[in-house]
Length: 130
Image (cartoon, rainbow, N blue to C red; front, side, top):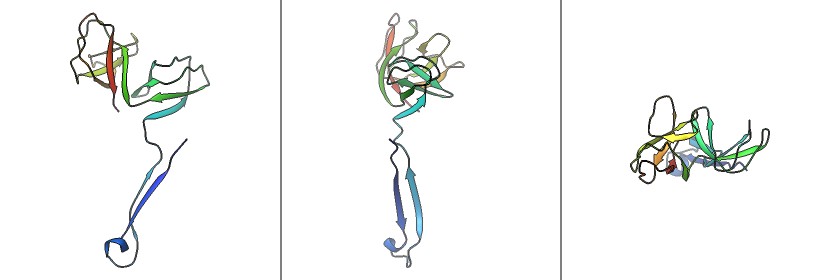
């Protein structure tokens, strides 16, 4: 469901004489979740790369189904086992290996480590950021 909020400020309310519009902002969505058509089979909790944005699938979908993708929040995700991310360290989606890593390289930035992890750990808490 798309929300639309419109806020208009007029000069009359500010004491500048006749009313005219100074500024208008339209918010079409809050931006926490985006819905797309799945291009493949996806499971809830899977990372999803949309050009330059990494999100987390919120439902199971097969090709052609609607898929809700979270763009905000903290999720436990698979990480490269040799990485030892510190709290706040940037994490990148390595699509080739289907894991998150601290190595930027050609990978897409997904967010930051919410909790530090040790070498050998298979997961990390990721705070999504866009």
